[in-house]
Each structure stands twice: as structure tokens, then as C-alpha cells.
Amino acid sequence: MLDQQNFSKKLIKWFQVERAHLPVPGRGDSNPYAIWVAEVMLQQTQVTTVWPYYKNWMRDYPTISHLADVEQDQILKSWEGLGYYSRARNLHRGAKYVVDEFRGVLPTRVNELLKVPGIGPYTSAAIASLAFGEAVPLIDGNVLRVFARLTRLKSNITLSKTRSDISLELTRLIPVKHPGAFNQGLMDLGRAVCTPHNPDCANCPIDQTCAARQAGDMEAYPVKPQRRPIPHYHIVVGLIRRDQKLLIQRRPENGLLGGLWEFPGGKIEKGERGEAALLREIKEETGLEVDLGEEIGTIQHAYTHFKITLTAWFCDWVSGEALSFASTENRWVFMDELKDYAFPKANKKILDILTK
Ligand code: SF4
Image 1 (cartoon, rainbow, N blue to C red):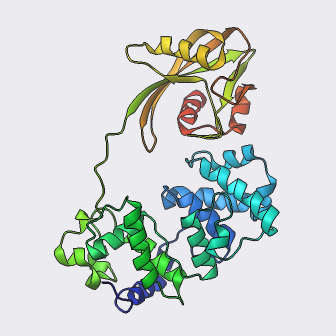
Image 2 (cartoon, rainbow, N blue to C red):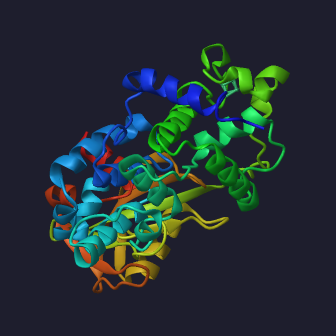
Image 3 (cartoon, rainbow, N blue to C red):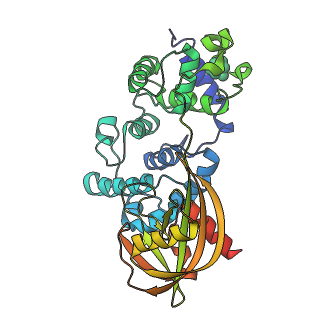
């Protein structure tokens, strides 16, 4: 069993020395809004990717009231390229709620923070411990990995029972005087030292208490179920021209890439040719008759749970008015207006081909 003397104190001491070399958005900040924004951006996303988005966000929306005041389209445009767009919509919804219910000031305790839409157990613990010193543990992928190695944990860390056991143990270990340093130290240790491959045990402040280090089987932990192979889809999209404008459609709010704009198209079915699939998809999604134009190009893109090969063509409108069967809105826009709309990365790659 880990004890505070050999574990928590060494971890905090290490963090206090190393924190300057481990810059992470929102860390070391006592502004709860900055911590909220940073922690939401950092979910499933690398620190280096987050930095420019975080800086621009805090410049454009420096307070909760600023964020609550803008339209969702502007928020999605600011988030464009960062992925998991429900995070942006939830931040925006949460900001409006904080303005309406808490006069624009975030509450200080976990149980109150959990009332804010979009703030879940992780983000509430981050804000409460880092900004307000509440002694609650923070558990992300880095913390799970460190903990699993320290204790040679045999349980599957993707199970909620395992996570709640770890949470209980960390609640016992977290020092009431320095909960923020403890939480940040554990996360930063996982990110910088106890990495998924080749952990730097020689420079780890808690190697003396690490069971996996002593057994020499660090990379056997954490235990996870085997991953299924990632599916790969072939997609076609059409940039439909009419009177020098192009048709774009807005995706439904709920679901993957919700609220973003895109060009109509979809998956190529088994045994189908790309061109035929495109005409079928355009008919199904917009009701339009179009002629196939020239091919623009093909790009590859990887989402978290699947990969795509996407080919785009120009198409020319023939007849019909654009309907919204799978989208929430249609717009015909000039080419130079496309930059004002937030698109998924794969569509952006097609636009990059066009502007080259
Ligand atoms: S000793 Fe190695 S495996 Fe153990 S916590 Fe430190 S870096 Fe991770």
C-alpha cells in the first residue's frame, strides 16, 4: 500500500521543482475559468496541439461572460481543428448557465460545479482542486497509468469499478494542504516521465515505491482489453456549384462533429463506384439533381474510432431546391466565404487542395 510519506511528499516536491519545465495550459493558474477551458481542451488532445487554441481562446473570450455572449457558430469556428466539438458546445452552454445561475462566477466546490452543464466529475475535480484547494483526486489516462504501475494493478483500468477503487485510494493519499500540486504532479509525471513506452524510471521521484519498477515489468501496466481493429471507410463528397456558389450543410447538433458545416456526400457502399455513390448520396441528402464535374482530389484522415479515405468532386446543379434530410441547414456560399464556416478536418483538407 502506498503511504503519504513515501509517495505524496516526494511527488509534490518533484512537481514544485519541475513545473517550470512542464508548461501545460491552465496549470499554475488560479483562475477557475482558465482551468475549466484548459482541462476541456486537454481531454483526448496533446498539450502541443492545445496551446495555440488555448491562447487564442483566452484572448477572444477572456471571461465567462464574454464566452456566454457570443453565437455558437463563432465558438465552433474558434474550435475548428481541435476535434470533439461537443466539448466546445458544452463549454458555451456551461458559460451561459454560469452567467444565468451564478452571476458569471464559477462555484468553488465539486457538488456545485457538477450542476453546470458540461462540467462532469473530472472537470469539476480539476477546478475545485486546482483553483480552490478542495482535496479531491483527478483521474485521467496519465494518472491511471502511473497508479497501475506503482501498484502492479491487475484490474482492467477501463472498468468503472477499477476507476472508483483508484479514486478511493487517491482520496486517502491526497494531502489536504496541497491537493492541486498532488493532482498536477501525478498528471505531469505520467505525461513527462511515466510515459506509455520507455518510462524514464531512473528520473522518477517515486521509483522507490513503484512495484512495476522493482519487478521490471513497467510496460505490462496498465491492463486494458485488446483493441478492436479500427474500421476504414471510403467517402465521397460533392462541391456543388450553382451561380458561382457552393452548397454546404450543417450537421445535426447531437452526434459526431455536431454543428459543423460540410459538403454533402457519404459512404461508398460495397460494390459501388465512387461516382455513382456520390450522385446517390447527393440525391439522398439534398434532393438535388447534379452533373458530375471534375475530381478535386483524395485525402486520408483518421478519427479516434475510424479512418477515412475521402474523394471530392465538383458537381454542377441541374435542378431542385436543396432540402435538409440529414442536415439541419443548407446554405449556398461563395468560395471566399467558406473560411467563415467551421468545417471538419477532412473537409478542410479538401479546401486546402483547392487553395493550393
Ligand atoms: S518508477 Fe517508472 S514505472 Fe514506476 S511510476 Fe516511476 S516512471 Fe512510472
